[in-house]
Amino acid sequence: MNPSPLIEVRNVSLHYGRFKALSNVTVSFAPNQLTAIIGPNGAGKSTFFNVLSGALPPTTGQVFFEGQDITALKAHDYARRGIAKSFQITNVFKQLSVHENVRVAAQMRYSRYELFKPRASFKQAIEEADALLNRVGLTALRNKTVADLAHGQQRSLEIAMALAAEPKLLLMDEPTAGMSPEETSSMMELITALAKERTVVLVEHKMKLVMGICERLIVLHHGEFLAQGTADEIRNNDEVRRVYLGQG
Amino acid sequence: MNLHSLVNGMARHRVGSALLFLLIFPLLMPYEALAINILIFGLFAVGFNLVFGYTGMLSFGHASFLGVGSYLTGIAMVHFGVHWIPAIFVGVVASLFAGLLVGYLAIRTRGIYFSMVTLALGQVIYYLFYKADRWTGGENGLRGIKAEVMEVFGFRIDFLDPLTKYYIIWMFVAFALWLVSRILASPFGSVIESIRENEKRTVACGYDVARAKLLIFVISAGVCGLAGALRALHLSVVTVDSLHYLQSGQVVMMSLLGGMGSFFGPFVGAGVFLYLEDIATNVTKYWMGVVGLLFMALILFFPRGIWGSLMHELKQRGMLKGDRE
Image 1 (cartoon, each protein chain N blue to C red):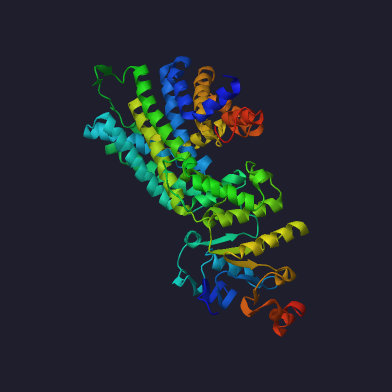
Image 2: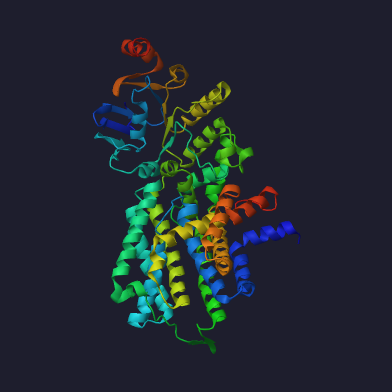
């Protein structure tokens, strides 16, 4: 890696009792690159993802973001530094309006504990939320309650919420899970566009889907780092083939 | 002005409209003491609902803050001869501290565990005050709380006159309701609602959830403490029942009765509860049975509560816009 990495994990292990969900993984991500983390079920992809987002503190090892050790920080501090994520299972504020969901996410950059100013006075947050809804194609549903939205629309909403934080690093856990083929292809287009402006890391088990759009792939297997490289390199890697096509 | 714009105008100035109504409220009640009681418990329920309805944490220990507010106001007046206005301040500050202590220990837990921890800590506070009978009067309660007659701009303010007492308490309640409404409309207000909806997502948005929960818990305790302080002045006595978990349960019931999903629901619930108690006790000593039946019927058929259902109906008919209630 020539440019200094945006985020880097060094010798990270994560154990649940005796079970080793991750062992000794060292990976770094360069700025403005689209990377996918792939691997069979139970490879530790989601665990790794949760380490990157600060949701799970590693048992041993360190996480560096923009050169600083952030291992000990809380999950909300990760978010505040510019690491945003969208979840595998849709995670939104169901009883609030579509616009309010994104506005709350954008508001974080302007005000968190202000008690006496009306929220309506934070105009930037309101406008940014509208711009993001436009970008993910939800403007028409602005005032709907989120619980009334279709699954694919809720996923788009989640991405708008993640973007509202203006993240430097966008983490996406299976962004196309449960989507129709049309929704999947428009999501892939959106992801490609987003990756031009920031670092994006995807977790995906549909290997074919990410092969086409990602500059770099990282393969995990049984919680261990297996291989990394371009789509072609991974496709021709004997170890990866054995894992995916052999005993899995 | 048609009905639509009237309803929406009132909703936009929800606190103002409610306070106007509360100005004529004692004239509608059979006697002033009941109106005062409703005012105080309405405030208690609104304060409680900050944690329950808005943040989604069911506390079973909120009687602590009502009781601590009452006792400390009473203790300041009886044992230290403090004037009633600073004594209210003492009561509120004490409940803020009680809220900080209970909140600090309880917010680490979620769901039923949170309810149990608040219940247990509430009972600890109950026994502390029960045992400290030199200060609190123990079983007999703290007696002798007398608010002096005051002269303000030539007006004689006498707490023994029930209508005067109502309007003085009204002023404090008005201030508190305005404050609560303001907080709910703030950016912080949307953070606590986000926590209720989805805690994990709120963290992922970059909000310190533990801190926000503690802050709203302390604010809620302070509002309930003010209700307690006013109650001490109203009754001239503080009994240890005010700290009991039955009192904590009652405020949950009041909130559900009126509707925990709305700003005034808990206030309305408190009013209906106390009014029914007043009527039903004249008819039968089993008044709890009457209230209980009504409560069950409401939970089964109108789970949004009295006020919540009314607001929902208005929204369905397009008479009310947005989330103003």
